[in-house]
Length: 162
Image 1 (cartoon, one colour):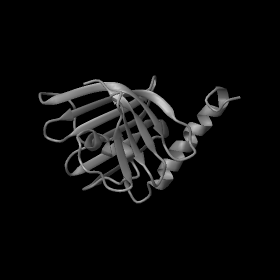
Image 2: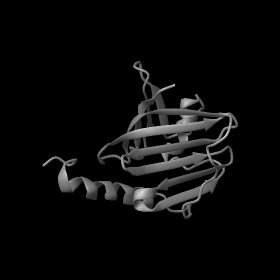
Image 3: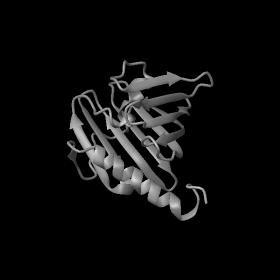
C-alpha cells in the first residue's frame, strides 16, 4: 500500500512534525500567540497551492497556501490541507512566529528567523531578498517557485496568484 493511502499516511505526518519539533530545540515555545492581525489597509493577499517536504526522505504534503503581506514588511502565511491547518507563520522586521497546529507546537523568536523553518523565509524569497545559506530559491518558467534548505532537505514548491 502506498505511503499516502490509508493508515500509513497519518503516522508519517506525525513523524514529520515530531522531527521538526526536535530540530527546533533552542527556540522559545509559545501558546497560540499571534504577532499581529491581518486586517486593515495596506495588506496584499495571495492564494495558491504548495507542496511541502518537511525534510529529506519524508513525504511531500500538498495543500492550499495563503500569504498576506503588508507594505511595512509584516507577512502571514497559512498552509492547510482542508480541514487541517498544517503551518501558520508570521514575520515582521524584528520578530517571527511559526505554529504547527496539528502537533500543537509553536516557536517564536526575535531578530533573524532560524533557517530550519523555510516557511519563515518564503516572503523574503518571493520579494527577491538575499537568503542565508543553506536556503536556495528559484523561480520556475511556469510562474511557480521552489525554496529549499539544502542542509535539511526541507522544500517548499508552489505558486501564488498575484
